[in-house]
Image (cartoon, rainbow, N blue to C red; front, side, top):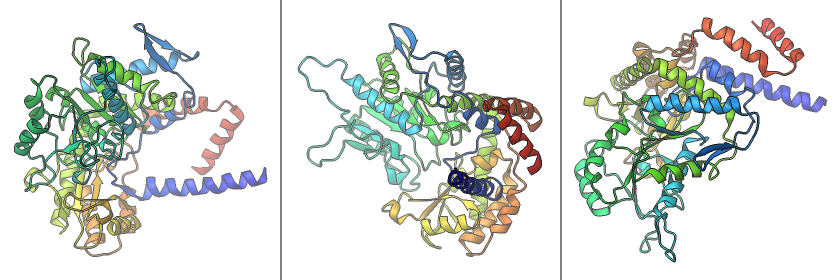
Length: 478
């Protein structure tokens, strides 16, 4: 018992140190992360965490296979309604527990869908051709043959590589699609599935452009948009469903400030030729990919979606203002900022810098971390691979939610320049800056949240003795 106590104490000390560093001393600029609000975090550890609520549609009725799930069933229905309102679409599948799983659910469903009409004796086939963004041009890993697309697309017998073609990029801006070449490529290749979306994401995707080209094809390709990085910017960046997309996937913990989960949304109607594709998506979500779909984070996502729907306009506007102010200030401080300066360098939450004059992307990301600025190194479109990355990728979304505005990001840009250009120390200045931004915004105020949090916290522990001891220790700490 003594050994167990010491191990847990040691781990707790390390957790406390990491919490303090990441939440009170660091400026987090990783564009694929965010800190949920305290109420969202409490929902994650509430009773549904660890429970099961398996269900599927059978003969037109939703059948649940566990008892004691009335509450979580209602939560799931409410969340579906909230997210349908957010996206302006009729269908949302909530059971993927990550964005990558959401993509794989769609790829599995696509293969099942294209084989529905095959005749007896015909071989089961994979997708003939998929179009996506190339990994080194900013494409997301999960949409690559080495990621979730693995095993779902045919192989070219001549090259022994998967039949995947990439969106062409412009020579004057490698972060934008070359639509003239794209027109030719679409006519030549005739993909069955078109996947928009990136992980290095500075500009909107040409969804309406592609839709207007392919809309009369028989059959036309399915248009999918992996919005993982920009899910929380739905509307201010673009609205893919209004532009012709059939499916939107994404993770809910980047610009969308929820817990770590994934979703599949669609505007496919019951009358659509793709109606059975939605049936296949539901079937590949469960039982195809999940059993327990992590009910604690499902409850947390409902709370986060309430927050997002309440504060969407103000949050999105500030994210874009901050990203452009940060990019401009970095450029003015002598750092090479990627993207088109005429467009403010970015239309999203992301800012990408080229650091090859000062070292490798890996070296500079480590140097920034040593100075309490958390980023990640990034291969740029003209780099040969991630092993020779010359960029650093940053996002403003988390610190926007902690209250930073344009002038604050201008200050931060000078600290980044100190580290990158001058190789000077900025650790203490960054820690001091972070002390000004510890309060969460775009959620309930502390005064409104505190009594709710207290009641939730008191019911999480079945032992009143333990809860009382925790409260007593909290009083001593404060």
